[in-house]
Amino acid sequence: MRILLVEDDPSVAASVIDGLVNANLEVEHVSTGSDAISKALAQDFDLILLDLGLPDMDGQDVCRSVRETSTTPIIVLSARSEEIDRVLALEFGADDYMVKPFGMRELVARIRAVARRVSPTESGPVAATQNIGALSIDRRSQKVFINGEDVYLTPKEFDLLAYLATDPGAVYRRNDIMNEVWDTNWYGTTKTVDAHVAALRKKLGNQDWIEAVRGVGFRLGDPNS
Ligand code: CA
Image (tube, rainbow, N blue to C red):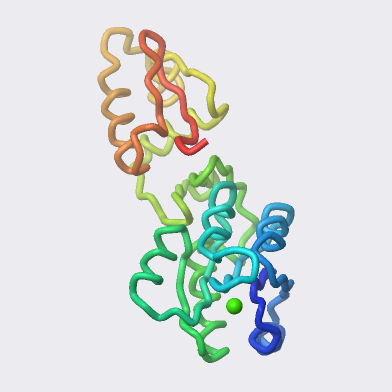
């Protein structure tokens, strides 16, 4: 596993690096928010450890920025122990939160737990995951995540989402959707499509993921882009 450590305090960074290396984890270290964002976007890390008090920006903004384009799990490391800080971090897309000072054994255990949750098949072949903003679609395991959180879909809902995600932004005609997803030509009623679109929108947490194009069909797109 490759981990990006974002921490400006040299002594904390040194001890975390030590602990991770001892646990056979690979680690890269940066000490500013801007370096963190550019590294996280340029390279493929398995997990990010993120300090909140950084010299150039707040870690919460780093978290938000990374989440716009990446689902890499993030564990926030912070001296702030207020509940509101933890809640905010999780709302900004962090996967877990640890209050300093923490023990290395607990940190490594949390890293492994978050990694397992995000990719339950860590030992298997690398999953081909498609990312559209906060949405990740893993066709191999038929799993869908929003901000790294599992979204439970029925098989048909998954098929519909995967079909619309073939070309995000493109409009798919109702009849083509019926053909492809339901393998049938029900030229009269497309209520089934509407019902599944409604269910998907609800589960994705934002109506705007799937836009209805009047008289034509539907299009999938990142509501935050
Ligand atoms: Ca700090």
